[in-house]
Structure formats: structure tokens, C-alpha cells
Image (tube, one colour):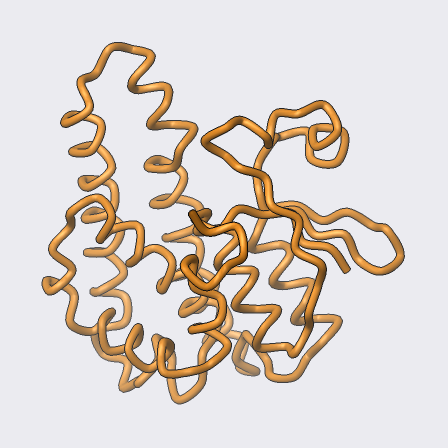
Length: 210
């Protein structure tokens, strides 16, 4: 199994956590996003979007998009499960994960910020945009799990929700967001970071970390 990624990519970070939880150790193939390595013809032949992560399984099949990769991992390596057994709870976990992976992360990622710079926005405005996107998404997520006992987002075990949350909080801090405004999210983050699978997946633990 091969994982194409980048140490600071939050989408790659999610998948690294999932792999660690499942006890899987793929070959890690880094692509430096700030140097444009994800746009190299050889990589575009694998992932035509020019995004990370991309997972190649042992049979050579190629999977893209972090949520799809994590659900495939959960279906092919079911222990420990990343989704609850109850259909309603599964839907709630997926909704939380998508609030981050589909609505928050994409509008503050490297590609969008680069486009804002191309349009002439000064750097402080670009950072303000990214911080705003994080605050909007995290505020909604805080409300989504406000009544959940925890300690994780949805109960006593980590789910896809936590796998998406931890990297997004790291992004928020990079853009200067005061995450103290989200105590319930921080409770889930603390529970997750106490686990080796999460700690070992952190950007600063990766061999390509700068």
C-alpha cells in the first residue's frame, strides 16, 4: 500500500490517522505542495485533480479524496470501526466530518489561498479569509456536538469526526484562530491526541516535515 501525501496537508493527516488506527503501515510518498510537485505529469496521471492524498492499494487500485479513502479503509479493515453501528449515529458522524472536509477545509486550503493572492489580495487579507473560514466551520461543529458526552466527538471512541477535527484545529491555529472559543471541540481533540495513532500522524512527526 502507498500513500501519496504532504506532511502539512490536513486531508493527508486524516488518512494517516485512519491508517494508524487500523494498524496499517503504507509506504509514504511525499509531494511538496508549495513547490508544486502535485502538478507533475507523473502525479497527475495518478490523481488528475493534482491533490493529496492518493492511496494505492496492494493490487494497484487508486483511491482519491480523504473521506472516500477512510470509508474504504473502514470497510476493508473494520476494526476498530470509524463509524457507529446505529444508522442515525453514522449519519451524524458523516455530517460532522463533511462539515469540515467539504465545507470548511476546501475554502481555506492552499489552492484557494493562492488564487486569492493572484487576484491581488494582500497577505493579511488572505490570512483573514482563512481564519474566517475556520471560525465559521468550527463554530458550527461546536454546536453539532454540544450535547454529546464524549470524550470524543461522538462517544467513547474516535470516529471519522475526530479524524477530520484534529487536523482542522491545527489549521485554525496556523491562521491565528482563538480555538479557546470551542471547548467541546477541544475536549474531543485532547482525547484524540492522547492516542498514539493520532500523535504519530501529526505533521511534525512525518519524515518530510520541514
